[in-house]
Length: 352
Ligand code: OGA
Ligand code: NI
Image (cartoon, rainbow, N blue to C red; front, top):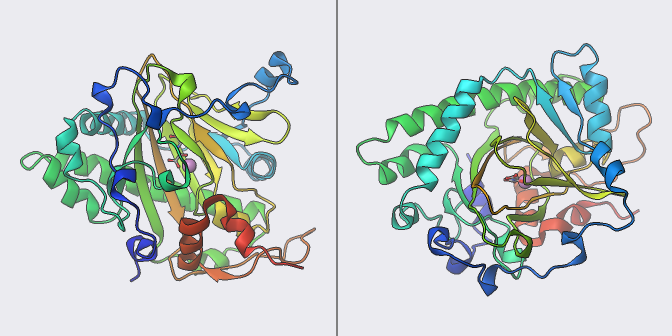
C-alpha cells in the first residue's frame, strides 16, 4: 500500500527547514522570522470596518433540516464553514488539547528526538510548506499518521506513552466518522451519487496535524502559518478557544478572521474536492497569524481518498460545464503539490 511518505520521497526538505526554533528562548523576532510587512498583512483601506465585522464564515448546525443547501452555499461561497452539533464531545477536545500541550511544552531537545526526516511525513517540525517561503514561520507542528503515533510517543515518553496514544487514537477515529458523514453530505449537495464514495472506502489517506503557535513578542512582524490551500478533500480543524488566528481569503474583503465559535469545528475544502467539484467548491486559501498574549493550538485532520484513487471532475450535476481539470491519481497530485505548492491546481487544469 503506497504511503504519503512514498509520495514525498522525491521532494526531500532541507534539514534547517524542518527543525523549528526553540521558541522558549526567543525574546525578539529574529531576522529569519521577520516577514516583510507586505500589503496583505495590512488592512484593506477600502473596506469599511463595520461591514467587515458582518462578514464571516457560515456556522452550520449539522442537524439542520436544510443542511445540504447550507453546506452547498458555504462551500461555493467560502470553501469553508464552521460546524456545530457534530457529535465530537467537549471532553475529547479538551483531552486532545491537554495532550498536545504536554507535547509542545516538552523541552526542545526532547521534541527534536522525533524530528521529521527530510523525506518523511510524520513527526515534529516546521510546516511542510516552509521551503516555499523565504522566511520561517512562528509555528511548531507534530504530524501523526498510522504507526507514527506509537513510535514517536514511545520516544517522547518511554514509560508513559499510552495516555497520549489513546487520546489521539480516539480523536482520529471520531474524526474519521465525522469526515465520512461530511463527505456524504458534500457529495450529496453536489448531486454526486453514493457509489462514487464506495470506491473510496479502503485505505483512506488521513493525517492528524497538531499545530502550536507560541506567544510572539512582535506578532505583526511574523507569520504563524503562511497562506496555502490544503491538499486533500477537506480538513476538519479544531482551534483552541482562547485565541483567534485562522484567516481565510475572500475576493473583495481579503483576509477574513475565522474566530473560534464555542463548540464548533472548522471545515475547509481542499484541492481534491476542488477538482472533483470542477471548481464549484473552491479550495480555501487560508493562513494563521499569531499573538503576543497566549500560545494558540490547533488540530487539523486531513481527509483524502486512497493514494491510488483516480481523481477527476464529476460532471453529471445540473449546470456543470465541461471538465476544467485532468484526471489523475491522488499520489500524482501530492507529488505536483510538493513541487509547485499554490501553482499545483493550475498544473492539472485543462488547457482548452
Ligand atoms: C493547517 C492549517 C490553520 C490553523 O494545519 O493546514 O491551515 O489555524 N492550520 O492552525
Ligand atoms: Ni491548512
